Length: 113
Image (cartoon, rainbow, N blue to C red):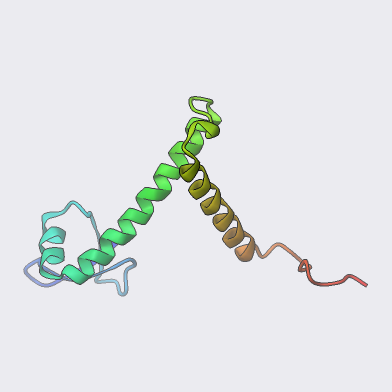
């Protein structure tokens, strides 16, 4: 998601990934005003595109998982480098999910007695 702060003429003055005050409004990445702002600020545009690319990569991963689950394709049909990249990303996401999971009452390193 992308939020923008606009001036009285409706021109975008700043963008952020979350609203920083009540004045910030949700904008569409396809909006012409957003395109104009990003063209005037290429550094910010690059960061916005990197975030959009990361979101799109996640969509592709989910699509691949869905095709495998529905047995449209088999994981082993994918080239070895693709298999390795998908497995590495899955492991990394699981590690992040485990770190964020606050339901564990005892850490794996803790001893009960």
